Amino acid sequence: MASTPRVVIVGGGFAGLWATRALARAAVQITLIDRCNHHLFQPLLYQVATAGLSAPDIAAPLRHILRRQRNVTVLLDEVTAVDTDAQQIALHRHAPIDYDYLLIASGATHAYFGQSQWAEHAPGLKTLDDAFAIRRRILTAFERAEAESDPQRRAAWLSFVIVGAGPTGVELAGTLAEIARHTLSKEFRRIDPSQARIVLAEAGPRVLSTFPEQLSDKAREQLQALGVEVCTGQAITAIDAEGVSFADQRLPARTVLWAAGVAASPLARTLNVPLDRAGRVQVQADLSVAGHPNVFVAGDLATLQQDGKPVPGVAPAAKQMGAHVARVIRSRLAAQPAPAFRYSDVGNLATIGRMAAVVDLRGLRFSGLLAWWFWLAAHVFFLIGFRNRLVVLINWAVSYWTYQRNARIIVGTRSETEKPP
View 1 (spheres, rainbow, N blue to C red):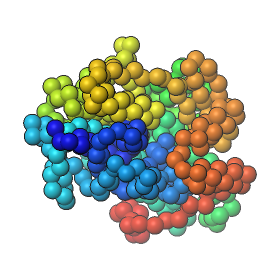
View 2: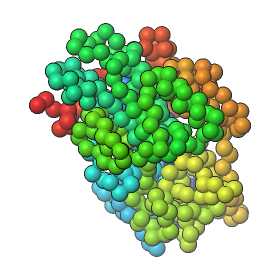
View 3: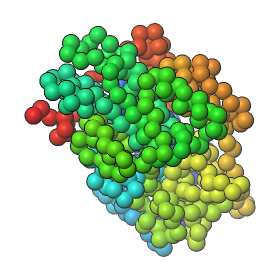
View 4: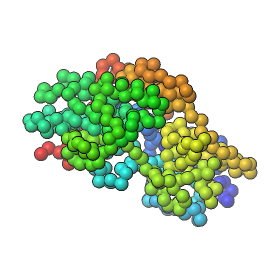
């Protein structure tokens, strides 16, 4: 081992960043590698997709966040493979890097359950690029409906389907309903945006399946009050440019958004270790990889059972995992036993729309306006940086009183379905 241990951290998300910061005073040299130059607060990504916030409101440059941490080097690159025998990682643009300790926290991507052709017609939401693409599709749909003279084609442009009723799907559906009913009011001359059809499709029996059933029922009621059609127990059988198909019906819809499933980063397959069905690494109690005690996996890329249940793939779990890996590394450096990871469940919360949310906080369950205020306060508190908190608070205050979404700008390359005929 080198005189100064080399720690390589792959991924600047919650797990990677929390591990990096937790090693600020450790006698190690850290290299943090990410394909993007920023840390993204993913729980609010849907707000960028629906024009409520702009990208800098929920993202911050990694170099700026870590500018005072002298034992960190940030590298903008993509890891293509891991050689655990040589203790080396291969990069897309830079030369290979040796490591003494390695943390892989490269996150997850979209999973289409073996139907990869659906990705073109139903984009998912994981990155800022995804958010910009979804925002473009949503806003362009209303523009195309305004220009359409055929009633059936116009109705298809005004039909939106969100596949998957987890927190992201519920938040997208509720916000889309508010945009159609309130934000775009009086802005069009040939269409009535409030007549837009918002459909939330879920193959399972209820929305927000990870929440207690009573909160799931409350969420459904709040969605329906906003005008969202909630279709549970119906699996999608086909998706194309013209709409979606269920087992017994066809729904014409020119905008379909995917929030139904995730798959682990392909980087996990290069480790040659056991993976679960979603491609996640089955880690040991201390989050290390079987047979490689100096290699750790955290966040959405890791799977670990605790009290008979898997640790959920949520931001608090990723943060706790990242901080735990840092503790294990410090223990190893001090020649002390490595502690086992123990997830502390801080609860679940999801927002449905304006003054509508559900909260499950360690057995304390509530919904409605109080839950919405709690959700807002929690998300502002966990944002990184004073500027982000201030800007988000101001934007939400303006949106609350006016229903306006000031990031409604259509930019970027248009997809084929968005191009004029």
